[in-house]
Length: 138
Image (cartoon, rainbow, N blue to C red; front, side, top):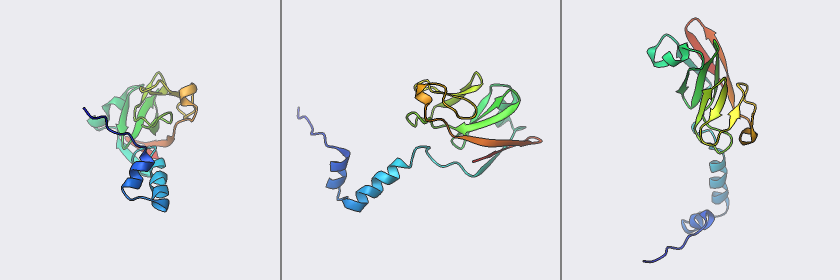
């Protein structure tokens, strides 16, 4: 059995013909992809839709457009699904706070880190309610 040679990402890209400015562009673009796809400026949710029935009870949450939207005791909160610790899309809502199931990072509903894995904070969004329409703004 032949052992394959391991090469660095930089060497691999050079072998593909990327050099100088194109290498810089690739690394720059890669570093901007922390949140997955970017959330639209405004998202609306019809709370009377059965699709969002989890939001009718306190502590319930749904995932919409790479955001986690939760009912926090009758008020609605929203945050990115991507954890700032390692970018894992594993943010949930439990016990009145944002929680990452990957490594246990905990965040307040305002996005403030509550433990060492959450030191970078979490992106949260503005919510407003009008009748049965919940609006989330980036």
